Image (cartoon, rainbow, N blue to C red; front, top):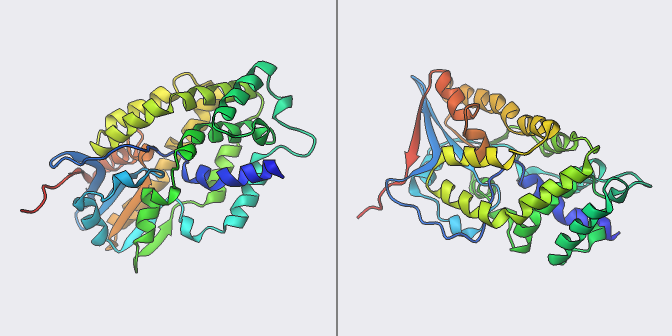
Length: 309
């Protein structure tokens, strides 16, 4: 029962954290004239907005710059990756249990060495989490949980993420989701279990570096430094093996064309769209911004406006 309770604690947070930049405890100061991770995309007949989202953060990022709220107010359709306000949490919980836990008679202990288990125990104990809480998790689920632990320990609330901010303030706007939680769980659960040691040790390394990483992300996001976010994402997976690189590509680049196509439909119609997707999808050579530019649309990065005198 304790194992299932531990899984329940992490499941929703993990889904919200998919492919996001995440930061916490940072004091955000938006500088007038500084770019932000939002772009105005224009065709000959219409325009739409693309916002690179931080799925999990704290209240220090609010209020958002006026240019963001104004763009949102002028839009009639909000497009997000997953509409978490409509998710059946009980069903989501069952999906996580089914995809993220070993079947009866199997557990993580049978897939990792005693040395890896000792390092896992040491790390989780430092956060007050009983080590055996993870033993029924498959390696991909353990890896996600380990990276999330510092954020959860710091009291991060997924309700403070950008997606939830806009969903809660959508009012009478039409809300559309690009994917669903089941699709995202399926992506993660496609990762093979065969090299559990590598997966756990790699996750522990990333988790231990999280404070430094989060500070960088907070700075890059608040200053609209898209190139640096792309570089950071690349550095985080630099020592991944072939399977991990393939999964990373499925999670990030392979999903970008569908997002780009949906925004193009907005531009080709009279629909006033405001799209909010993980920041990692917007940046890089295969990101949505580059794809839209390659398709001939005008793409302008938004800047923080000076406060009215």
